[in-house]
Length: 273
Picture 1 (cartoon, rainbow, N blue to C red):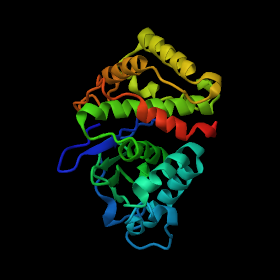
Picture 2 (cartoon, helix red, strand yellow; picture 1 turned 90 degrees about the horizontal axis):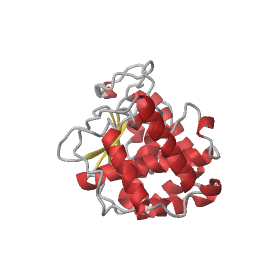
Picture 3 (tube, one colour; picture 1 turned 135 degrees about the horizontal axis):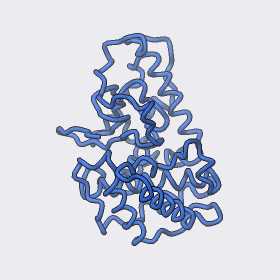
């Protein structure tokens, strides 16, 4: 996906999770800004209230249309109700929520969602106000505000996307007790970022990746260490095969990135399993 350019850089959610379904994939072209109203957006005024948890994270949530407010309430409620992402949100409290809030917009971005360097959170359309979109961007917020990673720097942005993808896959693996097949639709992000490969090569790499996840998640517990060399090897494969970030000039071979941010994140959510 192309998140565009401008004064403020953005990190994109490119609908790579769950795995793409050609029969269901929608046109990725951003929809016009729906603030003009309409049945799905609810126009300006509405009777639905904004959850206090939403208000402390999105400064202008009350200006959304009724149905969009309801979707945002539900999406954030599901995020906070999940042990893993609830702990990530709690980690952001003193680093972000106590100091500032996000501004929300509908439209004006490719893919599901993006977040700019000045903390404008854009959903691609009303349909993209989902828990998946929030969790993706919450991980980038953690990388920025807790991990000290400049996710808008091309030298680190690609590495950050792989780190996010690997974290999501580790969590899916753990939640399904080591059985990827138990995850509905094989939801590991690998299924979407391997789009440049087909046939036996794709199947072989998928098997290798799942085996690596198994080695990382011994006894169905979050990893206690991640070998830097293996992290870099899979990051390179990710950068070579992921289609959604291939036109963004990212470096997927930055040896200075390390695994500290990921390991700190895994430690935060360790007692969820």
